[in-house]
Length: 230
Image 1 (cartoon, rainbow, N blue to C red):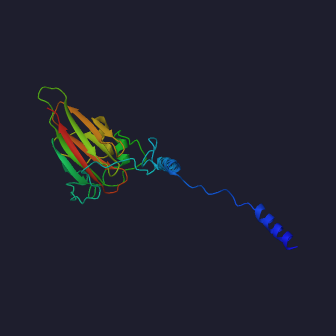
Image 2: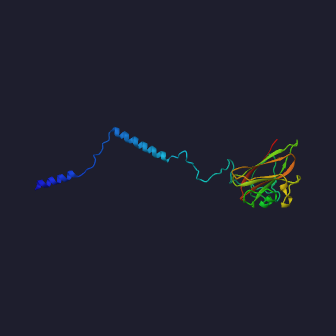
Image 3: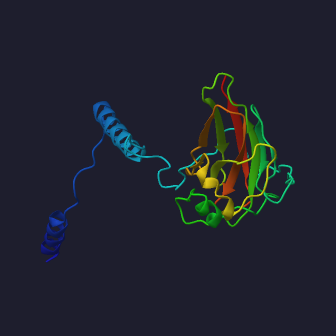
């Protein structure tokens, strides 16, 4: 009886599966395993690296940049206008850095429209502007003398206007009845990332009005330059 019980126990133990025998790695196996791991690690790193098609920063929404040396937060002195309709004189070679804060509140959409200088946008120019009077030097040989006026306003969308004035003796405040549209005039209404530029051609000495308009009316810095050719 004891003999049969012992045989049954031995038979049951022999039937149990103990799984595969453990692998004892030799040198060749170790080297192959390390190479596979390095390859997988390299593939994982490559998947995390940006590809050439990835547009870094494309989802930031930032499409405009402020030029070097132009600080939108700088505190500039407020220039008090000489009149209710103009700030001061500007001359050939001038480069003025100032803010629209403290400017005049004389010119607006209706006035420009009456002078046939219609804005190409919906803003009414209800905020402050700066208007400068400028004596065009003319030409000694009756040829057209070119004067370039450049407005830089990367911090706020501004526009540039010029109007030839009927009298060259002194600047005045003109309204809808004066019809400045019959004289030489022009406007530049680019977006803020682009400079606004106007060229004034004249063979005679004459007085012009140059206006820097802010579309939003928010006080912001700008740079206005006047370059007179030879």
